[in-house]
Image (cartoon, rainbow, N blue to C red; front, side):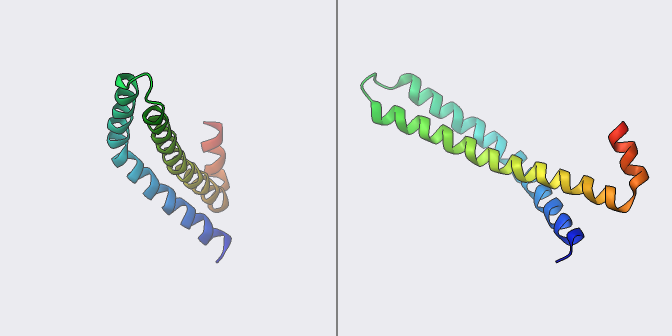
Length: 96
């Protein structure tokens, strides 16, 4: 696979990740709210329940971070493709 093909693959994966992340964002917010509510209303001796709520929040953050990583990698790959194909356009993008 050529360097350009790898960059295009990263760009495509990033675009897909961005689409999925936008679709999941509402679900993430609802799940986070449920975790906060469960934590807030839990009995003060319910260490297991509180630990589970914190664990779920951490897992959701990890999943979101993974998607964001793919999105950022895809955007960087797109910029690199522009730089490779049209250096003058790249200078315009970088310089504003």
